[in-house]
Amino acid sequence: HQHQHQQHQEQLHSQHHQYNHGMYQQHHGMNRRPRVPECRFFNQGRCLHGDKCSFYHNTKRANGQCRYFNQGFCRLGDSCTFVHNPERIMHGRFGGRKWINLSGSPPSKTTIRIAAFNVLADGLAQHGNFCLVDDTLLTWDDRFERLKKECDSLYSDIISLEECNNFESWESYFTAHNFESLFSPKENSPAETLGASTDGVCLAFKSKKFTLVAHEVAKSPVSVMAILKSNDDENVVLCVAACHLKAKKAFEEVRYAQMTQLLSAQSDFVAAANITPSHFIVMGDFNSQPPEKCIDCLEENGFVLLTTPTHYPWTTWKFRPANGTPNVAKETIDHVFIKGTIDLQSVYALPDEDTITTLEIAGKGLPNSVYGSDHVSISFAVDFVHHKSKLADNETTVAPTDDDGEVAEAE
Image (tube, helix red, strand yellow):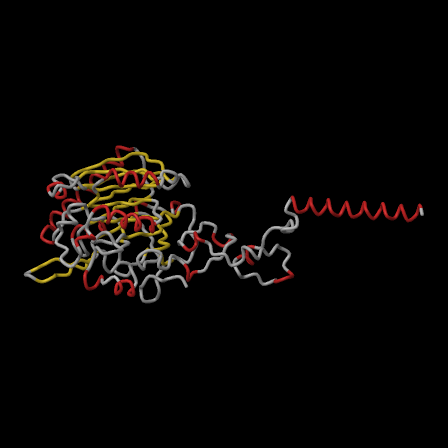
């Protein structure tokens, strides 16, 4: 009887121990997963070892899409534990546009996203003779919501806005997105003569990514210049000039004089700041297409044009009346130029053909119910390669090309 009692006590003790151990495991999450690192290849859907893999296969995470890669900018590259699916990169995230990877390499700490966007000034929109656009689509409150959505889709680190007015609204938007913004009002603003606020040029940058070393604003041509030092790499120092040149084809010589003046001012600005930038950027609405003289002027000074016809066959598409009939203006007049060695990684493509058809862009032009301006934004992801930079040699490297000279797209 004593022996049976002892066995019963030992059985109760064993059950109690197992229960407590189980509760301990459950409390500390030990039943949820073993204490081994997750298999990042399994999470990406490409582990070759199956059940024999010595790392943990987390079925809850497996095949989860990396939202940063889908935006085109996952900084972890192959070490990311989420799926990198090239077919998902920014497809149709705004107005039929997507990011296209050009270099085939993942972004680095020095990858910077640059954008320029003529946002169509309030006042000029309502009086711009967009003869095929419904007037209800041209009010400021309605357009501002669409303009913000387009800016959101860019994931910019640096962005310039041309024909920017109602700056208080834009400043609030940028502040909410952790940007610092600078503004230069236009002299004799046409928007102001139409009863709206003065338009001008805005340059905004992410305050966590850059330190503002110096800045300067000018009214002729209307522009903002800034020296920005990367907080990720102290060797990357950018001198950025955002500008808006004189409109209309008859004023080519005026635009050439404006660009000559801007480059001279940029040189004086850098000298006064007593710093040597690793790269120079000039961007904005040039109201010019190659081979106009202001474009040639930049190229002669060592700048390379990123907005090639391959990437941007047009940046504005609108209809205005001429001799009683709608006349189309479909041109590439917004540009980004860079001087210094770079790796051009990605470009924000124009709307696809389905979107152009659905939104009747070819038939009615811009703005419309999706796009708030008569221009589309232009944007690039650029890796600024400081250790190869030879500014004295005016050496600039861009994306690799295929045998036909076209920019090669990553598969």
